[in-house]
Length: 468
Image (cartoon, rainbow, N blue to C red):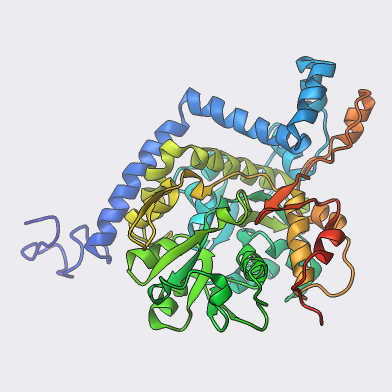
């Protein structure tokens, strides 16, 4: 008989499903076969000397970038002290636990069986694919990556210690640490999982209504209050003269339910994570109004993090997790791996999406729902640097829209939650002033520069904000 059914086989039940004997559809079977083949090829690539060298350089470059966010400062330092002295100085740096442990030789793991939560979106790609590619296993970890229904559930499971670590929206560890929307529990962002990779998607009926100034009364979906999606959508609306608290409705909708709500007419659009922007196009219920990279190119979205307590109690385990996720990020950053990655994360245990949808998102060659094929390679990327200046920007927006009441020490909160290195005193020992501030850089959002050194001035510059 064919690969699909075998009605004359006495040793197998006739389930009218898959000939492999498992209780899944034929489409699921083919997706898993494709995923297995892609994972085998990506594992092969990860074991080459070329990738090992690339991955090691990627991790070292990430550390150096943390120390020298302004490239001119890095070059001045190298010219002044020479490569050898610079390398020795950087090797002697005592960074925050994550990079310190990463740079040290592997210690005995305090805990090997771990449960890590994720939401089934492309932002979680490095965290997810580290499992089928064996990156966790190579670090001596037995990791169960667990699909989770929504962000509030992720938060609760982290607070209740049901998860050891998790895929977060990057503002969530800030909010949880401050006790916004939950009990205060210190959390840390170890890496940014992805940059860009989101979009504003509108229902097809709005094809001729692209000017946001005309969107008064619209209903929009966002995945969570403490999300870059909420803050970028609010920013975009306000810059176009709409008050997001009074002129439109913002509804929290789990990412997996956004397309269904768009189809049902419950919302006019959403600013959400991929692959659901592309899925709306694929299902012919929506179009991509704009990519969020057009608002802030390089903006953070999701993060990998855990509780401060977990890091303190399990520093070697955390270091092993960190190495695995960074190796996965290095793999995901290389464009030549993206089509294979789409196959790996497509099956039901991960994103449960058509491979064609994921390929469009990850390669940046996609149908926009308006009759055109776009080619935007930077649509999604996987730069792991947790810039503390990004955290300061998020905090300004939390305060702008009333999530934070009263004064906040932006810098202190950002540096406590977003893990990064600090080499200033070691540069000073070498006679090299290091005043630029590791972890901080300037960002441009809708043409307006954000300087993390002047958050209050930035916040006060907005005409539209929550006044009570």
